[in-house]
Amino acid sequence: MSYHFDVDLIRQQFPLISSSGITYLDNAATTQKPQSVLDDVEHFYRSYNANVHRGAHQLSDQATNTYEKARNQIKDFINAPKREEIIWTSGATASINLVAQSFALGHLKPGDEIIISLLEHHSNIVPWQQLAQRCGATLRAIPVTDRGDLDMEAYQRVLGPKTRLVALTQLSNALGTVTPLKRCIALARQAGAVTFVDGAQGIVHLKTDVQDLGCDFYAFSGHKLYAPTGIGVLWGKQALLEELPPYQFGGEMIEWVSIENTVFNRLPFKFEAGTPNIAGAIGLASAVRFLSKIDRNAAAKHEQQLLDDTLDGLSQISGIKLIGKPKQRAAVVSFTLDGYHTYDLATLLNQHQIAIRTGHHCTMPLMERLNLTDGSARVSFALYNNHEDVARLLEALDSLTKGSLHPAPKQISKADKQSTNPIKNALEQCRDWQTRYSLIMKLGKEPSNFPEAQKTEQHRLHGCTSQVWISHQFDATNQQLQFRIESDAKVIRGLSRVLLEALEGLTASEIYNMDLDAYFHQLDLMQHLSASRGNGIRAIIEEIQSVASGCRK
Image 1 (cartoon, rainbow, N blue to C red):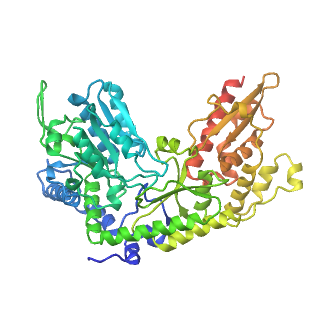
Image 2 (spheres, one colour):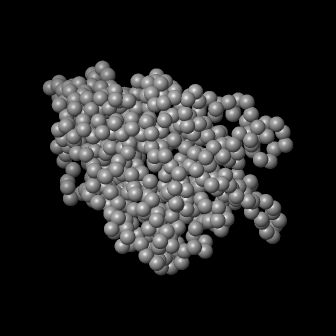
Image 3 (tube, rainbow, N blue to C red):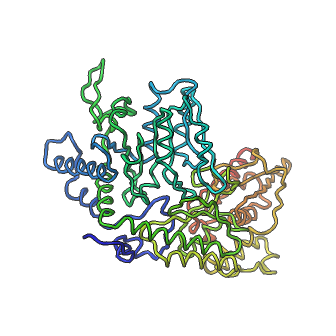
């Protein structure tokens, strides 16, 4: 079936989108999968599941043919010159690491330079950073303007005779900035540098032709392109791939082995050690076939309209601050809301089945540059999103600023306050999670007694997505242990109040032996928390019990 862009028809192809009732706006993290992809992956496992290349039976033959046909389809999708240049990996991160590890041998020496930018995802920073440290090279970053664009004048200043590699994103996962890649690549080529493109976001929203870009390497992940997780692609120019040594060793990438020596396989197998993700490759090819039936230009216009409507709507909501204003933006909007930690904001929207992403988006250097200590909220679009999704988001945020998004919290009554555990009593009387959560948020808004002087690295608790500090006092005479907890997220601060009430007046031994997980479950709290929030509370509990263990007799 071939069709022009019809968002209603497209939504019907995605089971989760068409049936769940969730407004899914976290597509930059991962996209949902169309039925055709799900069917093709299931068909492989049901009908011809076997290993590829080495088998001498019909199942292996069918698996190998389909798997290698998938490689050809990816070659055509990105207009690569040769199928041998398509390397299967587990994702963009693995592709970047492959080149970083292989490039280290024979290509870098002390004093050489690698250039990245402040827009990069950590996956396109850390591998090059570690490579530079091992080789004695220098990692340099292109600055970002206040608007969120690459500072091209600064880029031209940092490029020089020592530049060996330039690694840049095609599209920022945090701001949606579309980088001027062709110009960046041309300048790098003039300086004699090798170029690497992180296309994890770009390939989803921009028609990509690696020959037209002129880059030397291009990497992307399947799970952002409507395909399964755990599959990705590294494309590289054949001459460079032939020159680079293998990154991993083992089966499939071997041509001949003796105890004394090994002859490596030809491309592309030289870089594909071990049993590959056969189903993932089949699923990625299926996703590419799905996209080939869609008018990509019309899809891009649709996404741009969603983006424009969202930017316009957010700009009219009091307290919303839009992050960045790049010259060219695609599919991504980041913002903050006065008075709300980004994680609290995401949790509140989740109660109304609106899924967004919050935090640093694996771009901490960029967040630091933009003075976003707590990161930002991020809305990201896919071709199946529609104007109703945008309207629901804007309505929820507008209601939140007016105090009508969630029910008024249950007040802690006079009788509750006179009891031993007023917070626990109030929570037990809440009939649903919405009311319970509203009470937690109310507790989180109350003034903290945590001393500012103790908000130091010494008291900082790691393992939480938000900032958390814990201090304690121990009275050795009566063995009583008292804690203070502070967080920049209201939901964590409110849950900490619940926790501190449970610990009030207990000895170190009593705290150590108390099942705090069970306490939270009894109050029907842990069941409704997101994984990050649940892990944050557990990290606090573990720290408390570790301190109690050291203090008890």
